Amino acid sequence: MTDKTELNATHRELGARMVDFGGWDMPIAYGSQIEEHHAVRKDAGMFDVSHMTVVDIVGERTREFLRKLVANNVDKLAKSGKALYTCMLDENGGVIDDLIVYFLREDFFRLVVNAATRAKDLAWIEKQAAAFGVAVRERSEFGMIAVQGPNAREKLIGLLPEDVRAKASKLGKFAAIEIEGPEGMPLFLARTGYTGEDGFEVVVPNTRVVELWNRLREAGVAPAGLGARDTLRLEAGMNLYGQDMDESVTPWEAALAWTVSLDEGRDFIGRAALEKQKAAGVPRVMVGLVMDDKGVLRHGQKVLTAAGDGEILSGGFAPTLGKSVAFARVPAGELGDVRVDIRGREVPVRVVTFPFVRDGRPMPGIVG
Picture 1 (cartoon, rainbow, N blue to C red):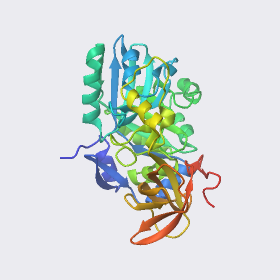
Picture 2 (picture 1 turned 90 degrees about the horizontal axis):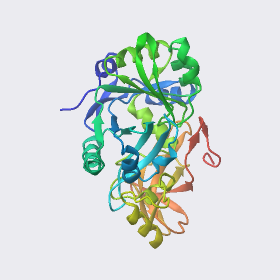
Picture 3 (picture 1 turned 30 degrees about the horizontal axis):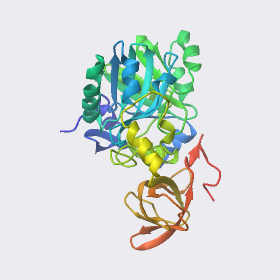
């Protein structure tokens, strides 16, 4: 049995091609995946991301608990509504999941975790929470719509009552507010996303999510499926859990060192293992690849380097660039001329720094 979001029937009415995604029946595309990709890069698109899990942590020791649970330091969150991207690690420094933490009150933080890791995440969080006496509440009554693109914020704000529009307009990046939307609709509005474009991720009660989706469509926001979401996040240099990292990979090996805070006096889970690996020398690194030849870089292809063999993690055609790009995990060291084995043919690729695209444009040196 696959799970369904409250928008499932709406997707089918729009003619979406549906697929099983981590146990959820989700839209891969409504028509042209490439057109949906470009709609987000050039105007505004929206994604049903109600399969993601909202988890509220409540209690006096919530901050203390999160200082232990995640690798980034929640003490960076001092103002209500501010958000932090981080990884939750096991004792070996492996990535259990990547997630966003929102600070709402000193005794109330909100996590948004990945759909495919929901059961594993909840079990781990509850196990670690027991010693701190905090409550872990999964909020399954909520849906979520990601509205992304250069015109996304303007189109969503236009739907809000006039007295809250200014507040929503002033919301900074990686921050959230709770406001009243159209017809008294309660909204948790977060200026975050997974596309490299500006926009909002909107948490809304399941009882109102179809209404919000239809209002956004009427405002000119294009429905977009998980296919476009994947090409957008790849261009934007954003990891996908289960493909680019998992428990067998540390943040050092997944280009996520920036999400780790080795601040003094905080013993988060996995810290000792991370410090040990860093001191010994991280054996593998994650790099960006661009292929100027025709063809497509795909997950699992072998990457040949002077330092040894690696493999493609996420890979595919990048519509904004008109060529194929990928993340690859390769041995640390001098890589030399890098090639990818595509059905027995060694195709040259360029090693680049990602993101490949930012603010709708190729980053310097990416196009070549």
